Amino acid sequence: MMKELLNFGLQVSGWSLVLLSIGSLWIPKVLGWREKLAGLTPLMKKLWWTYSLYVFGSHIFFALMALTQREFFLSGTPVAATVAGFICLWWSVRLYLQLFSFDFEEVGDGLGEKMARHTLTLLFVGLVFVFGMTVAWNLGWLERVGEL
Image (cartoon, rainbow, N blue to C red):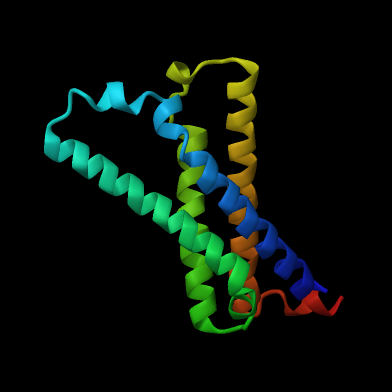
């Protein structure tokens, strides 16, 4: 039963990451990156875009892994625990930043902005939960729960 729930959770996570990746294509426009990055040196602009593409590529990779490698994620191996642990750590850091670091003053406080922030926060909580439980599954911590 637990394995089926985790399988479903990974599938939902994968599709959520696809939607996040598609939605993130509008972030530069919505947040006015062109204007805000205009004052940076050429090197700093290139570094900004390089890191942005690394993050985008990682999200696509995580989505593809969750959608196509669920058997691997539920294999009970140390490698699966390590990969799921890395993804869980990635989203834990992002959740922490969302809750305690980012200042959303310049984004606005309208209904759309609030909904977007809360939706992202719930997504990050869900991703931490699913990949954290996947780590626990691979380490054998959920065996007794799976027998229930």
